[in-house]
Image (tube, rainbow, N blue to C red):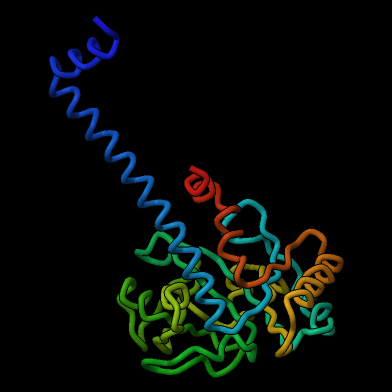
Length: 249
């Protein structure tokens, strides 16, 4: 009698245990496949968001988490004069529990910066200025939170009016709460701090020139990263421990 025959007989004699084992293995494989698919979907949605907004280079200080560490907003002033930089804007992003939603992206954007340009208002309006303590909500986030203009939303200890529902033309944008950078800095006790500087390069800039720009930024900000927009999704996955493990598998 061969070893293979013994194994087969053992499996046949215990059909219930064999069936449960196969079900468990199948569920495990399905879960891994689903999570990998979610990770790649997240990467694509991030790249889509950056493309819609018109961001060519992203500067941040990634450090083993989905949201990077904050740094001084004065970095933008050092980057703006560099060759091939057409426009810069600073952003503070936070992942916070908002009311019944366990985790939601909050995006505080420099007032007047180009990251406001592609936002389309579905209902209501945008904030009037940099100091108005008000938010607009992506249409998907509005559905989750069951909010409309005139309602309020609680962020940390502050309750802010919802003045508009927006379509950001990307899943990440539509699932976010957006407000002025100044206001989010104050609410989260991050005055003078941001965790992204977004850059648009001048038209006609070559890949080599973009690479040279990233190298120049690295010299100014050695603890950070200057990433070409198309690479941001991949790097975010690498910095998120669970996602990177699943992709490696």
